[in-house]
Length: 167
Image 1 (cartoon, helix red, strand yellow):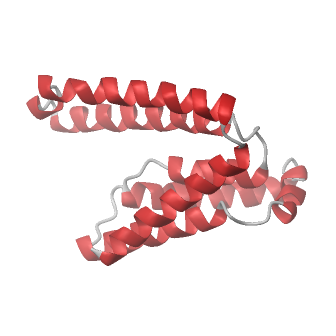
Image 2 (spheres, helix red, strand yellow; image 1 turned 45 degrees about the horizontal axis):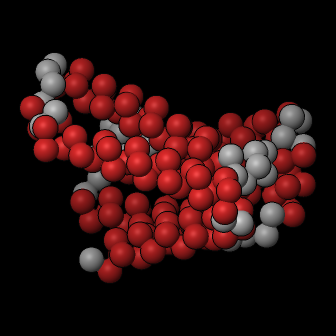
């Protein structure tokens, strides 16, 4: 539904920027009240809240075309349902699956593979992403404090949101 909603470019950029800033700010929040909620997530009210939040975030993710991974990481950090060191790997896989699904959707929608998607000069991007992912995984698992990972992620997301508003 979100992907089919038409918005002006200016509105789109503002929505995306605000969503990124709020997502980054959520990662800087105190976890204790949210942790209390996550302990009761299996209740009927907890599930209803999760379904409502997931629906809203899914719509917004479709609207701005970011796949939802940018929401997923802060939610996992806030609820602490996974160890901090596991969240980047888990969300990276989630983003990969969404990206491949989106790419497949675009190919199906256009009924052909766009030649700009398979240009040989883009292949170095795959290698860069793979090597960067391996280096990031190693650093995140072995060397960097989990709180620093969370804070750096929050700063990066807030920075990108602010840059969108400034441009």
